[in-house]
Image (cartoon, rainbow, N blue to C red; front, side, top):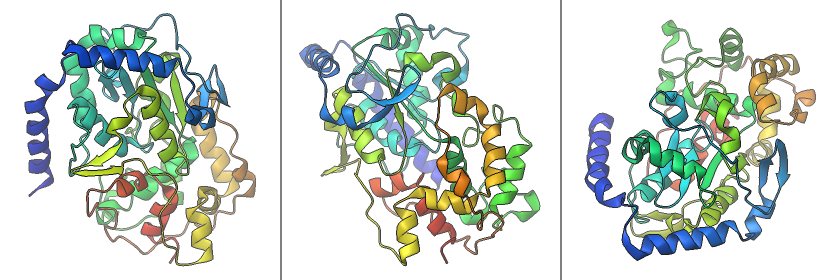
Length: 373
């Protein structure tokens, strides 16, 4: 079955359930859910005190979910599409999520599909990104605005160091589909099907306007209207592959939706996993796979890292990202290296939360691309 037909079937399946699933006035269970969520936000879950979050412009560990702002920008008819196309709106569960490519975007789409259909056991064979756009279409402008005004609702977003996110985009999009993905914009057309070196991607990006390129490569501030709406989100986390499982589980616990944190399909295994489950070919590979800065230092020369960081200055400023200390130790031996792997090891061979979460892990992606061979 082709990917197109598979996605069509998924869309039909979700559409057939959507009208019954989205019913904010659905009896006592909804009222009980509202009470429970209010209690959650007024409590201090242990996990929240361990989660690094952006609060009032500073990255801190804060055990309290604070009200975002007293007023929000209405989601009106002329609202910029980027304000809504990446946000999952769920008034029933009092939850909204801004999704940014290369920051757990695929993994979160499966959780959002479960929420949208109010079905923890739902298990889709592939990501369903359209659930975000469709949630806004069904919820509508007024309810979307009310959701962002609700102090008892969790409005979450994860952010990522821009240089690490750029490396993740390169290692994923420039090696998937046997090095033929159209999303690798740095690859010259005549090199379709061939691997390119990371230096080529850097030089391509330095010539672009980072606010206008494809979403996998563009500024994070261009997503979900974050330039205008950042303070409307009351749970802003920092993505790292080491903390993703714990922090995503924490967001769901705080939001009172942790019952959806299961694989589904008859399995009650936790969807978000803590830590990594990998085998290692060498001590160097083990070091890199448990510490992504090892890969970053090899991918960038110090000069290239500094130049590209300046290109992403808007994100570093708006989100107050700290200066990446690894830059001063960057060696760049992989910057101009062309790895020998165009094997499609990036294709998901099974419906696995481990694979969904590894899609953005630069250490795992570097191994699949052949940098350790």
